[in-house]
View 1 (cartoon, rainbow, N blue to C red):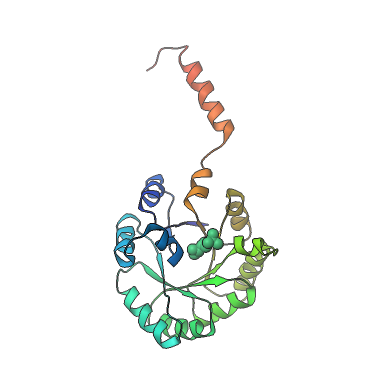
View 2 (view 1 turned 45 degrees about the vertical axis):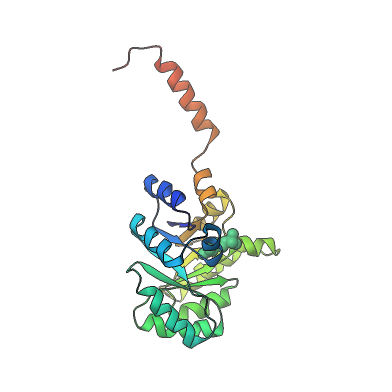
Length: 215
Ligand code: E4P
């Protein structure tokens, strides 16, 4: 499973990239707003750090406006994936944009039906939001399993990009559920590093290493 970082924060992206584990980045308007930066400038800054797909979201609402916005955003950098919220207008825009070679990440997916429609329209990635589904009393991971099964059985090339991840266990469950990608918030990625038994083991090795002459 590929790992994307779900953030627009440059320090976190640098830290994740230095770990050598990042395959791409996802951003959204809320993540950009938290940084208080200029959109295009930040996306281009990210592209210098991570050599992989970078999702940048459209905010238009009609098909025509979405298509125009998608073409503008896609021109910024070759690694840009245009993120389009799941709507009827978004599906029509996706179909047109992808037929002209632009990659689309359909976001705000909450059901296998929506994922199937997005894939049929030509989406490169679909982003089901598991945390928000769980918050609303649904089983987010069951939605991931069903989408992955449908894509496999129908031989659809669209990749399942599990989003709205809240903890390290979500990442394991996404991988086991057949998700192609997990987009992980920085705090969750950095928590995945930690295990108390690793810390204890290092302390013990360091203590024992003092008992012999170092090389
Ligand atoms: C994904 O692309 C979204 O940016 C993100 O995962 C949403 O997560 P949230 O539900 O924690 O806002």
